Length: 636
Ligand code: AMP
Image (cartoon, rainbow, N blue to C red; front, side):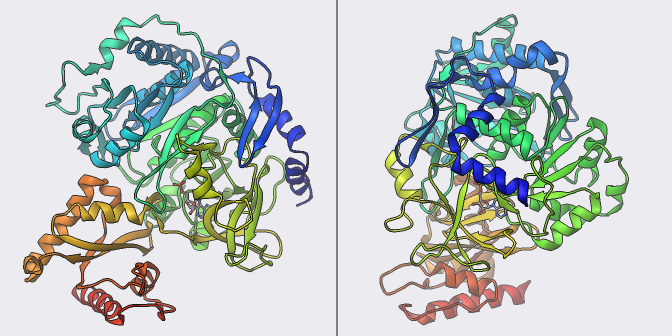
C-alpha cells in the first residue's frame, strides 16, 4: 500500500498544498485567497474567497470540447420512455428551467424544494438552481406529506418543483396530490409550485393562483440564456435532509467550491472515470448518492450519466446489465440491497449481456456482507468496490483508491480511509484510539475535507452538538458507526452506534417511525427497532402499547389494527418507514429512569441475548416482547 499510503498522508500533512492541486480540476472564476480558513473550528471554509459555480462546471465548461457528447441518458422501464441529452441539449434545458425559476422571483440564496420522480426535469431543476445561485433541497419521493411538510417548513422554499406522478413497479405514485396535502400541513408553504405534467395522473388537480405547468413555462423560454451566477466557494449549493436520533431530520448543508473539488477529484481517483465515458448510478436523486454520482460528479468530470427509472428486476433481472451493454457503461454504482436482490435471481441474466465496457462496480449505502461481495465480484468478473460514506460526507470516507494504487480488495471491507479524511477508530468510553481488531467509533479529526457538510441548515449549534460532542475534551466528528481495522489496515463497518436504521439503503431514524406510529389515535406508546433482514439489511419492527385494549380483543381486530398502523406510517412518513410487523404489548421495557431499552428489544427480535438488564424497571416487559415474537413466529 505504499503509493496510496503516501498519497493519503500528504493529504493530511500537507493539506493546503494537496487540495490546492485538486482544486485545479474545476474552473474558478476568481481564484481563492486561501485553501482553508479554519479559524473557527470545527467550521471549515474551503477555498475561501474563490468564486465558482456547479452548473458551469457540470455543463458550460464542457461546451467547447464536448457539446455533441451525451450528457444524460434517461431510461424508464416504467413508462417505456428513453431520452438522450447532449451537453448542448442539457445546457439549453437548464437555461430554460433557470429562466422559468428566475421569472418566479427565485434569486441567489433562495431555496427551491424539488420533489420529483427520476426524470430528466429533476436534473434540469437542480442544475438550474445551481446556475442562478439558488439552494435546492431535493426530498426523496418515498417520503409522504407530513415528512415533506416538515422539510418545507425548515427550508422555507420560494418555489417547489414536482411532477404529476412517478411510477414504481407499474403503479402510479401521485406526487402532486402528496404535495397538495403537504402544503396544507406546512406553516411556510411556497407561493409557487411548478409541475412537470407527465400525463400519468389523469385527474390532476391544480390551484390556479399557485400551480404552474412546466411545459408552458418552458415554451416561453425556449431561447433563454441565463448567465451564470458566480458564488463564493462557501455559499450553500444545497440542503439535503437526513435522519438522526431525534424525530426531526437535519438539513445537511453543502458548500459549492469544496463540493465541486471533492467530486471532481473522486471521479478521477476513486471511480477512475475518464471524461467521455459513461457512468450508471442506480440510486435516486433524492439521496446523496444521486446528488453526487447521478448528477454532479459524472457531469463535472465530462462523463455521460445514465438515469434509470424502474426496478432492478423489471421487466426481468437482466435490465441493468442490458443497460450496461447498450450504453457501454464503464463505471457502475449500486447498493448492497440491489446486489442481494440480484443474487436471488436466475444467474443466466448475468451472462446474457456483454459487460466488457464495465471496469468496476461500486457499492455503498449500507453494510455489504462478505458472501454477497464475493458473489457479485465472481458473477460479473470485475472488481466490486465496497465503499463507505454518508449524506453528511457527500463523497466516500472509506474506499479503495484505485486511481492511485490497485490495492487488493478484501470481501466485506470498504478498504482504507479516503485521502483528506484523518480517520480514527475511538474507544467509546474514553476516546482513546483502538488497537487493531478492536471495535471503535468511526471518527474524523477535523477539519472535515472539502465536500463534507459545512453545517446544519440555519443551526450551527446543532451541527456542533450533534456531530462533534461524542467525546469529552476532544473535538472530533462522529460518524455514529462502529468500525474495526485489521492488522493490514483494512476497515470493516459494524453498524450504527445510534438509533438510526438502514432499510434497503434508506436511512431512517427509529424516532421518526415511532412518531409516525403515534399519529394513530389508539397508540399510547411505541418502540421501533431495526432487525437484520436477508435482503434489505434491516427492517423496522414496532412494539406498541394501545390506549384501548378492547380494540384488539380478537385476532381479526389485531390484524386490522396492525394494518391501520402500517397505513398511518405510509401516510405520515412514507412507505419506506412502514414497520414489517406491529407487535401489541401491555408495556415496553424501560430503565428505572424511563429510557427505552431498544437494544434489548432488538436483541430479542434477532434471537440474541438481551444483554445487561440490571437497570430494567420491570423484567415482565421483556417477557411480553419474547412471547409476542414467539406468537408471530408460530403464526407464520
Ligand atoms: P446515508 O446518509 O443515507 O448515506 O447513510 C449513511 C449510513 O449508511 C452510514 O452511516 C452507515 O451506517 C451506512 N453505510 C453507508 N455505506 C456503507 C458501507 N459501505 N458499509 C457499511 N455501512 C455503510
